[in-house]
Amino acid sequence: MHNPAQFCTILHNFAQVRLWTSQGLTACLAGPPRPEIPLATLASARQLADNSRQMAYTAPVTPVPATQVIGVVRKGFPASKLTQMAELLAVDRALLLQILGVSQRTIQRKHALSDRLSPAASDRLSRIDRIYTLAVEVFGDGEKAAQWLKRPSRALANESPLKLLDTDAGAQQVERELRQIQYGFVY
Image (cartoon, rainbow, N blue to C red):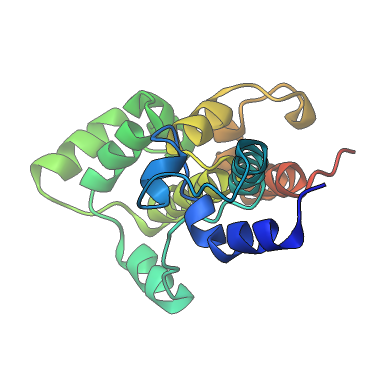
């Protein structure tokens, strides 16, 4: 076993330990490795940091007050928000239009007039954004989150989570599945 002083040094730098990436240990410690810490201990600390980052990742997202979101949804999102969400999820706009219950022609018209989406469509788009944000929090990466949302899930009756977001009940089911993944529950 390693002596407690070595672990204290590592734990003291825990915030830095969580930042260790493929750049290597020395970049984070702002200098060469400390000679008093054996390489095996540093490797253990790096493994601890990797596990911690994977299991306890918190997305650096500042929550928007619910009253502000409600106001924006009631007013309607700009039609351009749909394109942004399609790019973020790397999906075809037609799929999002189907989930939102809006025709392609309606969106073309709203884009041309710089008009806003209806409150109902904005609510669904807000729901997609909220679930995507939760998925990023769970998986720690936007690309992984988008892939999970597009892939059929056995836990969701072989439906892709994204397609279930057209209803509130479907969104609740997807959120429940994400929470189970986040906390390690399997039913």
